[in-house]
Image 1 (cartoon, rainbow, N blue to C red):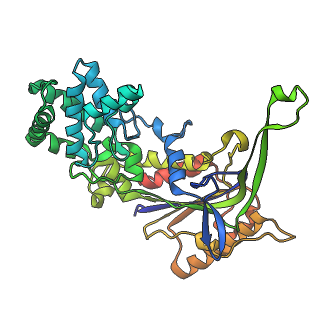
Image 2: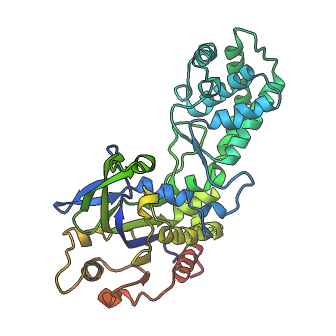
Image 3: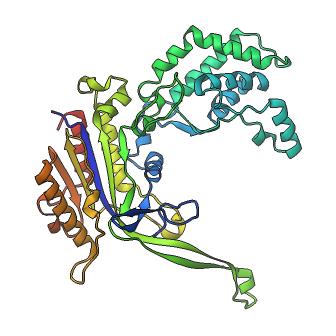
Length: 422
């Protein structure tokens, strides 16, 4: 039987970094096991994985000529509907009125800005910034795939071509509302519902999910579950005092700084955990029913998983790139394939790991992980298959394996598990 779940575990060390900041500019934290740990949010991790640019990046899977990943913005409808319509020669007021009504149809009445165009134009003229103020935006960031956006743009063009809309009419909004509603009743709504299944919502939305309140767009449940990464030990941080020298002032012999400030730096060994729900991933990517995943084409899901493993291992999150260079590779990357419900190994570090005089932090972490896995496997049974790569004191991993696999081997094995070719 093909594994229904893949579990990806990582242990990665970062020195002198500020990987993920809170609203106060400090490192994000998490209380766990009676101590405070430094944390990297799942949103931060997924953002870096989605936008990564490397040979095995997810964006390099060719699914659509306009782009593989979704468009995530409040300005999607303005950029991809209003502006192209205006370039076609459509009057700006008509382009905006029709797009506004399409937004209401797709996202709901509360999704789009409701400020009158005349009021926004007046404010834009007063502020002298019409290009910025005249934007038609949604109330929240929308997640739409390029095929979906292209379909909506085509519908907007059809609606304008089929109806005599007058930009000078005071009833333009009402006329646009009626025209859009009638057009969607004729079949556009059903066609969009069918289109939204599969990768039309964007590869990343099919992977990490898409929350929508619309009854037209397909909601996507996340097939890739990402936990917040946290340090296996108590937090280690210190304030970093820094100054910027004013070179011209310094030429006069004045040693005063042009700028003085502090920021927080942290270091730590982080445990990361990701689960691939294989049936749901196959369903999201192909549009097949989840219960029919084994008979569906799983090649794309296998390739997505292979690239995901590469990306998790080689793409680091991090702010302050220029001053901390927060780039690292995992000391350990372990993948488990099983048919049973996943279980995190985070509880191996419920009690914070502390190095001893004889052995360092990584030795104790590997030892703690191996002992915990042996205990939990003995109590509940182990996964159907397990593979790992590791660098460092690999002898401490015991029965987990020697860790001598390469990343290419491990990623290829994970992809084969999903395709059913392992």
